[in-house]
Image (tube, rainbow, N blue to C red; front, top):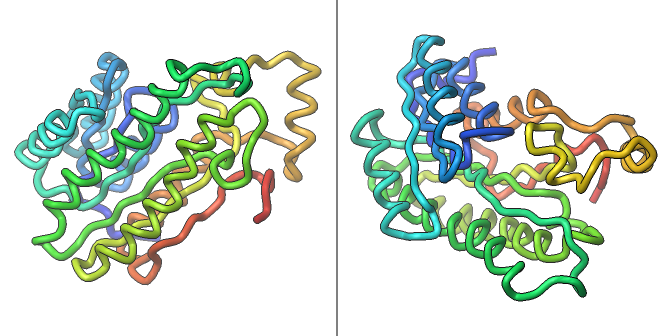
Length: 254
């Protein structure tokens, strides 16, 4: 199936590693020109951009601390200057920390709120203000299922991630008049190069207990997630907006 993404310009945040990197390369494989945003993973983003170029598209690695609105605006400006008008924004950047709430302090909360909430708002504002005059655009927000159903040991992460639902649905309602669609993809555990950090360790017995919570009896892989994001970005999904779609192996069915 032709997803009609060839020639479009896509910005993926947090794309220097893990799922963001896989998403960027997935768009490149469909013929899209991709900006791989990074904050601290410059080497990974540069390598991903080089790999995308080998697929025959234009691609760049673009750094910036999205918690700073001016930096977010600069990221959007550079992408549009070098690759053309941004038609798809994939918000993947987030900060997570597995920790019991009663053991945490405000110093533990701040990075998660700043990156996941403030950073997402800043880059979305910077890009949406450019999309609106063009009367077109697609925004896909990634989130964890902890933000939908709650999770012990991830209370602060879940709180930050839950804002993605309100953001997505509000964007969909407010920006529809400009032809901009917004959807979210909610994920359970996905095996990436940062899996240990998110899973809080992967001892055999503990992993067996985790996998037992999944009806499909396995964790996800980036390739399980990429197709859904590509479809939501595609013009083939032109009548789909304001939705939160779970790709989670059946972990939560609500």
